Length: 303
Image 1 (spheres, rainbow, N blue to C red):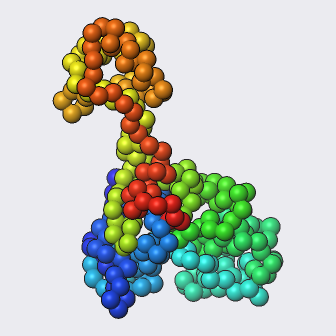
Image 2 (image 1 turned 60 degrees about the horizontal axis):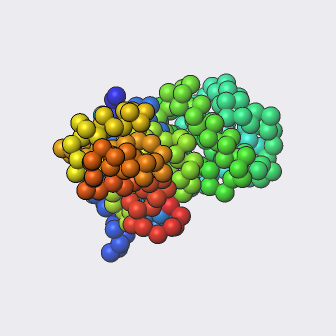
Image 3 (image 1 turned 180 degrees about the vertical axis):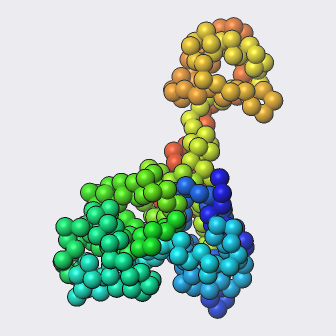
């Protein structure tokens, strides 16, 4: 896959406080990249630098392999923090304002985008009359003006009710699957990012501490029974007799059995009946939330 965004040691310092610390990340075409971190971890500052809102103290970033980012601005759409809306203007007028700001004279794109994000019926409403969910849809619509190849969205579901969260999730998946838009999304709602993201970046105290694909994450957090200290060839025979066929031999002899971890005692007894007594047999794996919390330095806090 072609690289859409690459950062190289991107850093932002305010006074003596390093908010973003030498972040090197890579987002590929078609990714939905979920950026995870506690409040104050540096997510928004990182997005502001990438979106051209804040200047890096040091480091660099490039879109689509182009070091001159002024050449790629038209291919990027941003919604960082709250959407900048004019409350006394209607939905359509807000869209028209940003159309003109980008030098777009054709008005046809406005109705098309409003229809796509699902608020065409509200185009004559003043934005001060909109619900939070509709404002978020409008903000995404504004970010879509110019039909960008990548969207940068900071907390797009923050403050929404469950129905609004589902609606925005469906919209983002639709943009990714139907339009091929690459997405960089931050959120403190881990469960939602798990449903959306194809790749994750975990930021803690300004440092990118982990970057992992969804498939790699599932493998790392997969629950299993781990058997150590036995001839794996003999162990495998017993497992197959028990109809436990999902296993893997790792690290020169450890056997990982991917099954209900409550079966560890039954496996141990079956091995013992054949005169095989493991040095160690136990369960491994964790849920996704625990994995991310540990990466963020432990403690249950908002990301």
